[in-house]
Image 1 (cartoon, helix red, strand yellow):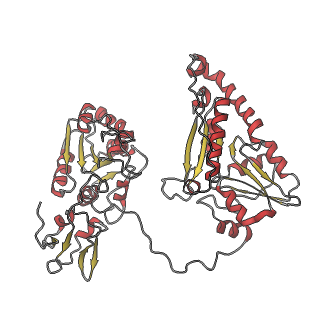
Image 2: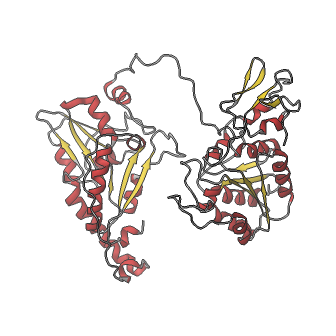
Image 3: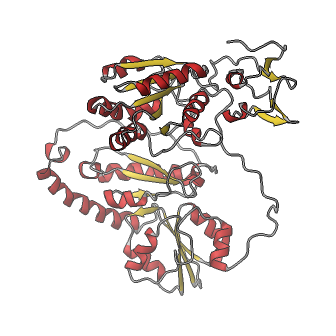
Length: 498
């Protein structure tokens, strides 16, 4: 927020991606509130072409007004594609730095003066941009009586539902909003509908101007919109009867075959410990049948949550935190420093799969490579954790269930903080060699379903016995550790050995 006060001297855009419908998010927040609170201009494109054009214009205006712009996207725009006209790349020279303490050092005496600059800037932005066609677009055919005020992808939905006969005010600049632009648009129209996903930001602004609008009184405040929702809520039309009648079987995300995290979560579930979780593909440890995670909040929260949980409840002997290697580097270290400094006997498990797994196999400071794949400085997790004041540090192989369980038991029993590093690379990494798949000997299988507790996608129950899909099997052999009858064998019929 403080960058609104200091500015940058050059152009800066802060990209955010809201997720109406929560396709892959923990909450359904509306980031327009941040723009309002921070007093920063925010733009919202409706398609790929506008993404490109808006960014170019926003960089120009950002430099002109010496303020960051926020680029708001939503899931549908981020995942869409449309025709884009390419242009020539412009090389902008880096400006010379000029020392300016009153502008860049935000102690109270300076910040008080800069607040007036921020307010004047917003007013100037509203005058130049909000009431112009740089970002906003007005479509008002002669004789139109219905007006639609909207932004982003909702414009596309509205255009499909109401057609060319309605008037449209498509807001590309969603903060600040222009009194004059909206009042001029509404003049002469008999009905105004505000169509916006999530919170009634534009709607409340219109109402503050004394404009009577139809909005969240009929449209949902939760979830993303669609043409069908607009037709149902605004036109009273029923859903398309041509839709598929039979429900489509759900396909929930699961840990991959051979995932090194599976053994850890199986062990924690078996031991009945409380697990403070974090953000990553290992969050799927909360999914049945593992069900081994109790909380997930935000990146880095697992360790801090464990520390607070143990301080309040005193459950140090039956609670752990789990966090990935990249997440630990991102925002987990501060929580561990707090544990070391305040000395709760907390056990933290760092799930080191040698990559950033969930978001696409990006490198991180523990891998030895930068994001371009070039060699880079490599942080030694064990040395780092010890340097932070943790004396008990050990590394385990999560494929070895007995080793993992013994480690958790010993560290929970210790009278000081401890860290277990569960180290095994992600099964999807190109450099990881796939093991030989295994099979089930139906004659030895007693149908106890112990192996099914792992939740491995390669294992199913077929004809009354466990069955391994060899096309999916990674060859980790973790399932064989659970079978007391030796039913898992190599494809040659040999017994599984470790």
